[in-house]
Length: 116
Image (cartoon, rainbow, N blue to C red; front, side):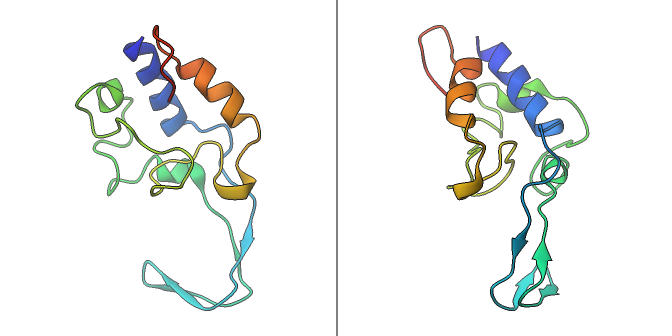
């Protein structure tokens, strides 16, 4: 089952169900990657681009199952955004997809019932 789990996770990394999450409004001026985001600006997170970030993923444009196999750099990646954000195919925080906690464990469950 680790192979099936790796296929699903790599698929979610490269092709998340939604390319954007709900927009947010900046509550104060902030610097994001050297860019000023002024208070009141609307911020959209491009979820699909996170999976293509060469600073986060080795060979981001390739479908590489090994990254989610034991020993790969994607093993244990947090998809909920509580431990850092490398990929968030279901959104994060209070706006995370309500079905995430029901669907993901069933899809990613191994033979022995381990979850994500």
